[in-house]
Length: 359
Image 1: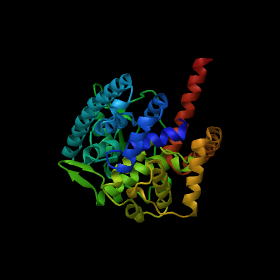
Image 2 (image 1 turned 45 degrees about the vertical axis):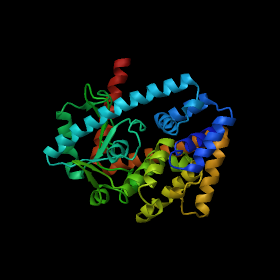
Image 3 (image 1 turned 90 degrees about the vertical axis):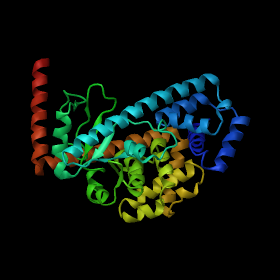
Image 4 (image 1 turned 120 degrees about the vertical axis):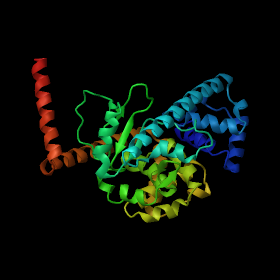
């Protein structure tokens, strides 16, 4: 199995309990083909869907086709992830209580938000790195101070963090399983005027005392976290973690209608939806608005799936270009923003001090 075959195999596996046509395809593959399980494990792990793969195969009663030692390993990892997610939910509820008691309403984003929204058949499916929540710009500094007073400190105490547009540097607390990212924005500055706290707050959902994005916004953010914040749109890359979330959320709302509220973001959203439509094997809820630009995007996406050498070569070029653009923008900000100037001066002083110590 090459990369593309492995990606599409896992993609279909993630849908077998909702899509009958994919269930039949996977059953036939498991019965009649030699599956490269090493490749499946490697790719599903790197895309953070290994527990989701296990949960779907288990629910569809297909585990008997897998090597027994692999099933044992999958079960073990999934149980660890379940235990971690239960602790994360407990931690998030604790933070929610702290902030609400101080007249701040956090809106939980991404993985934790999806757990609270109950979009998964089993909460063990979702692998989560951080607890992400957003607050208003007016409450941003207050929220950071409160969380720090509650015992959270920088993940890297000694790192001199540059000013961050979207969120405060990650914070963690002793004996808590997940770091926390306190957001004032959800996207990079270029698109912040189009998708931001003010838009989110108007239509958010309350589940008991927990506030989360509505399905349209959660679907959009699942995609844009990959497409915009992680540069997936520029490098024609799809991460199954984000794609699986998008697939599940497409069952809760109409994706094409959800994207109509955006202007600049509509195109990268539809490009990702198109790559999901193909990866998950033509699922109705992932139907996208096609045009020549999107079909070209899909053509490039498919080429990179089969030509690893070209993908790596182009990836380096694109990442370098984006890096230089961001460096230029940062330098321009030091001219107009005092916060950036102060950071640059402090950074230069630290570097000079370290240089003298090393001499």
